[in-house]
Length: 418
Image 1 (cartoon, rainbow, N blue to C red):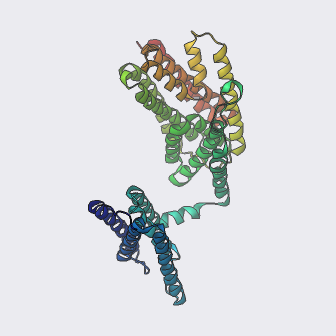
Image 2 (cartoon, rainbow, N blue to C red):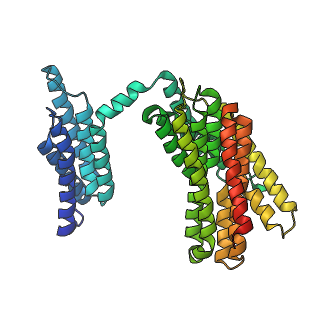
Image 3 (cartoon, helix red, strand yellow):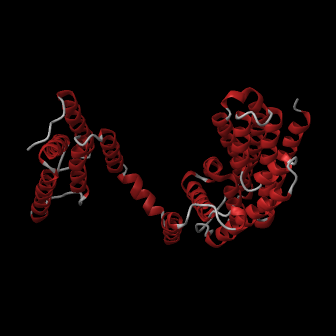
């Protein structure tokens, strides 16, 4: 017995969505003058998928399976006949798009219209991006592909397999979080290399600094320092990238405060905004000098950060243990010491915890923003250690100077802000 069909309005909306999505993808195929399927064919096949989904809802999933097999046979037969007649075509791209859009039509009738819209939009964008994708692949070398595979291995194979829970000494060692630092360093380094390769050194450094700062400014700094030893030129641009990342880290910090302590923004935000603006100005000056120097990072091969990233991940874990031990054995009144130690590896922990204490009324705002700022300055000190330990001689001077001036600005805010 068939189940109840959807009401008329829902039915028409789903059928209309399926037809519209088919028209969109068909428009792209029609525009490239595809000989296999155009705007009408894609609209009809997506509508066919929607009707198959409708019947599947009423009579069982076997209808959907039978409809897909029938449609796939039609597509395969048409492709075989075209190949037999030696007609010009476009490989299997259009045939695969037809199969995907049939399934998309089915999805619209299963109550997942938003998912169907996303899939159709992705198909249309992928079909239209043929020239751009082919051009990008032509720029890839064997070393580039090797690094991409390495990133996939550490980020999509190893990372999900690690336990995401605290363990070890004092319960501060989280294997997932520690390996995530390794993934971030490898990924940011590769992303910066790609951005500079395709956008140009100056623009690429800005993009890499902004994106890296939103993800992990510490990892971005470590990555830029390591690259300064392999790149033949462009140490000033790499230093600017690290400073841009630090400025963006304070943007992320401000967002965290606004989310957690939204009722106390008038007291908390002004000094933190001042610190963010100060670092941004320093980064802008460094970037301007880098542009005038006209020596952008030049890497003949993508930076291989795997070994160094693992070492830095272990160092990160060691810092977590030292911080936890020191906090456990320090006096309860040492709030600023706790803030400094907590901010060394990452600013988010001290920012979120302090903001939460303000929200619950357990900490005054005048102390809270100072603790957050101290944590941010500690993180800048932590980055200085990476700069000195990992950077080239030409990189250390501008990066260290920028970080020192940033810390000096933070100290001035602590001393003179009312």
